[in-house]
Length: 74
Image: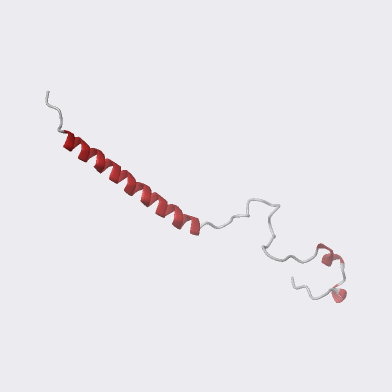
């Protein structure tokens, strides 16, 4: 039986490694673009509904009559 020459098997092995590296780079690029497109979904968690990032109005402001409230905007 004739065996393949070492140079041919080496070329095939290198070719598969290059293809694997290429696929890995494509997956990495996809992850980077997907990471930028991620939107936080809080619709499923009722505890987080209505919470807005940033400064919040004080909890006691709802119990103060509107004419006595300091300048907090809703």
